[in-house]
Structures are given as C-alpha cells and as structure tokens.
Amino acid sequence: MNIQQAEQSKLCGQHAVVIGASMAGLLAGRVLSDHFERVTIIERDCFPTGVEARKGVPQGRHAHGLLTKGASILMEFFPELFPALLEGGSSDADMVADLRWHHFGVWKAQFPSNMTGYIQSRPFLEEHVRSCLAARENVRFIDGCEVAQLCANSDRTSITGVQLRHRNGAQSEETLSADLVIDASGRGSQAPQWLTSLGYARVKEESVKVDVGYASRVYRRPSQLPSNWKALLIYPKAPEGKRAGLILPMEGDAWMVTLAGWLRDYPSDDETGFLDYARSLPMPDLYEAIKDAEPVTPIVTHKFPANQRRYYERMARFPEGFIIVGDALCSFNPVYGQGMTVAALEASALQACLQQQQSRGTRRNVAGFAHRFQKAVAKVVNVPWQLATGEDLRYPQTVGKRPPGTSLLHWYMGRVHELVASDHRATLRFYEVMNMLKPPLALFEPHILFAVLFKGQRQRRGHDAAVGQVEAEKREMEGAPR
Ligand SMILES: Cc1cc2nc3c(=O)[nH]c(=O)nc-3n(C[C@H](O)[C@H](O)[C@H](O)COP(=O)(O)OP(=O)(O)OC[C@H]3O[C@@H](n4cnc5c(N)ncnc54)[C@H](O)[C@@H]3O)c2cc1C
Image 1 (tube, rainbow, N blue to C red):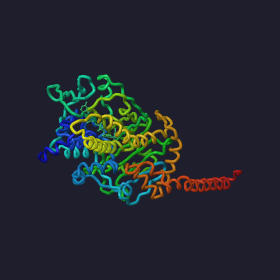
Image 2 (cartoon, rainbow, N blue to C red):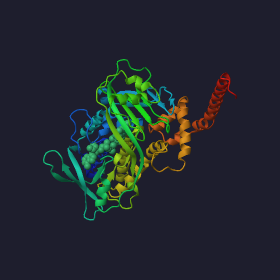
Image 3 (spheres, helix red, strand yellow):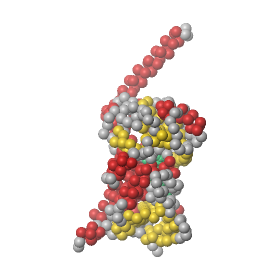
Image 4 (tube, helix red, strand yellow):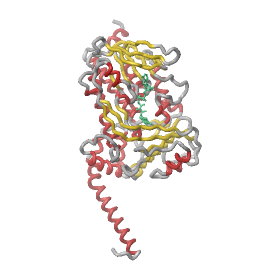
C-alpha cells in the first residue's frame, strides 16, 4: 500500500456535499476536506468578483465581530488567513484594552490583555476564508446553483445525495450523489420540509422573539482617531434601554457603524433619523464620533425577528448521511456576535466526531454518524443559546420560554456587569466568557461571587446612603421638612 492509498483508507467516504458557502458551510467544508476524497460546496448565489455583500448573506452589510475563540479556530484551520487579512487592511485589537464598551450603565474597564481580535467587514472575512478553502485540492465550489431537495435510498433511511437546480442560464437540474450531505443553508434552511417530505417527523423548534432591527452605514475613518479605542460599543441597560450602537474598524480605512434596537425600536434608514438614533444612545460618544465623519455608503437595514433553535438531536428517527450546522441549526440574536464563532465551534465538533468515526474502524462508512453528530453539536449550541436568550429575557416583552432561575441569574449578571467597570479580574473573566474562551461558570469563581454578594452591596449601601444624604441636604437648603 503506498502513502496515498494509506491516507485514503483513513477517509470516511468518497464525497461530501455542503449546502451553502457562507461561514458555517466554509468551515464545515474545511473539516470535511480532511476526511473525504472530494468535497463539493453548493451555493445559491453567484460569488461576487470583489469583496461585497451578497443576496444570500444580507447581514454582510452590518457590523460583524469575530470572537477570540472563533478567531483561534479559524487560525487552526487556515494558518494563512489572518496574515492575509491584516495585509489587506483588517485591524488587530486587544479585546479588552482597545474596546471601549458602555454597557449596563457603566464603561467596562480597559487594560492590556492577551486576547487578540481581528476586525474587518464580513464580506472581506468570508472572501478570504473562501479563497483559503478553494486552494485545497479536493474542494470544489458550484455557485449560482441551489439544492432543491435531498435524495434518499429506497427505504428512505439514508440520504444519498442532493437534487441541484442550476440558476444561471438553462435552469437545468442534476443529481449529485454523496456519502454525507451537510446543510449549512442558514436560518431559512429547507431541511425541516425536506425531512417531512421523506416521511420523518417535523423537527421541534424553539424561538425567543426579540424583534431586533439593524441600520448600518460605512464611514470614512477620520484621520484623527480616538486615542482610547479601536472599537466602540454602546449597549443599553435592559430592560429600561433598548438601543445599541457600535463602530468597528474595517478594511479600506473605514468604519462600520451599526445601530440596533430591541423589540421593534428600530433605527431609521434616513440620514436625520439615523443620527437622531445615534444621539439617543445612553452615551454621546458614538454620535460625537460620526457627526462630522464622511459617510461612504447609504444606510441599510435588517430585521431579525427571533433567536431560533431546531432540536434535530431529539428526533426519534433521523436519516443517515445528513447533518445540519450553523444558523440552519441555531441562529442567535446578532447583537451578541456569536454566530460565526458557534459555526467554528461546530466545525471543531465535526472534526472530533469524524476522527472518532474513523477510530471506531467505521471508515468509508458514516453509519450512526448523523445522530451522534447532532447530539454533540447540540452541546456546543447550549451555552451560546443560554447566553443570548438569557440576556434577551431581561425584557419582560420578550416572548420565549423562561428557564427556572432566570430572574436570579439576571440579578447576578447585573452585579457582574457593574463589577466589570472597576474589577480587573472580573473584567478579564467576563471577556473570556463572552469570547467563549471559558464557560459561564467562570463568572462564579470565588473572587467574583464574593464581590457580587458583598462588595456590590457595601458599595450600593454606601451609594444609597450618600444619595440619601445629598437629598436630605438639598431639602434642608430648600427649607423642606425632613
Ligand atoms: C444582522 C446580523 C448581524 C450579525 N452579526 C454577527 C456578528 O457580529 N458576529 C457573528 O459571529 N455573527 C453575526 N451574525 C451571524 C452570522 O452572520 C451567521 O451566524 C454566520 O454567517 C453563519 O451562518 P450560516 O453560514 O449558517 O448561514 P448564512 O450566513 O445565512 O448563509 C447561508 C448560505 O446558504 C446559501 N443557501 C441557502 N439556501 C441554499 C440552497 N437551497 N442551496 C444552496 N445554497 C443555499 C445562502 O445563499 C448563503 O450563502 C449576524 C447575523 C445577522 C443577521
């Protein structure tokens, strides 16, 4: 057996097909290229020739932050990616020192950390990831082509490929066989309908309705940059406040400015309304930064109705040879910036499951794999789902299941948010959890727990006493009875 044959005998199958060439599809494609002889990625859109947002990924016109965990996974998969991004104009930033973030009524502390982030526009990132993947010999893209249906074996227990509909030119149809089909077609995924049409039950879905609206505009980055931030975030104190705004640097010496509002408090797409909305944020810094800056694009909007999760792992019957990842599985309120990082974590889970499959001696056979993978990936999704929906549930108007202990958790996290203004250890843990480098349990370590339970109370008692005294002195000066 020569080296190539030996390598191939380790593979899980001949051909894997990925539906959708956005972040989840590209990352899954990267992993599959290590485990299948050939990988084909099908994309409904025609790829743009330059760096631009496309129809299938309309969110590309809005601010996209990549969390540190996501960046480190991308770095593992594509060592050449970040040098190329930086070369092309991405910004690197210390995720604590260079981020000026007002949240929950306080500015978070800023100090040097070892958390590096890379900031750029979403289409710029996606285009670079796609070209890194395209450089792999066994990966092929078919764009301008949609998957219209899944193909199954005669007793419909296994998915055997996909039905393609080419959209450019003749609108021709074609069948593509595959050992494994991965749905990464986003939150509008047809997988629930495809499965029911094959005789499977309808997947159980959960949603937490938030009605978030985005409005974004690119500005030229001013020559005189603020000295204390590369990225600026102004977030509300829920449930009183519903408006947020952020400025992220992007390639081409530009700023991506995004305004966002919860529960239909949508930012406007006209010039005056956009600036008025910016002025109405809890702090004036964002408005001050853009009021004299030069806009270079029109204002674009996007509406995001609800966090949405599909529980494929709970289906009693599920076909072999088909898995679901990315927003098609779970899509989060985008204001927390989790989607791409979760897609990266899911790709890592795919890597682990495929390696396990091979070590079981089930090479060239994906039997049992689909169910095992959906169970593994559900675990990946649990924490970010709880983080996103947990914060959204601070608004009493949010429609969704409130897990027991929600109010207590809100109280605790509210204290942590306050602590993060001054306590560096708590700040670091907060950023580590937010960047998915540590589990949320890290926010309950003794130092933070103690500070939340006692320090906050002492400070609040001190604050309340001081406020009481000022009020009393004011009344005394006005001659009012005490
Ligand atoms: C407004 C907004 C802002 C966001 N901000 C952030 C952020 O700051 N940070 C972050 O990490 N995440 C953010 N996200 C989430 C992030 O964009 C997604 O989680 C990420 O793109 C992964 O999604 P995906 O690849 O699963 O699906 P999508 O990005 O939705 O892509 C699906 C792809 O599948 C293609 N497709 C669909 N159907 C078919 C078919 N039948 N056949 C072939 N192709 C098909 C589409 O054309 C598209 O290319 C944001 C989302 C929104 C809406």
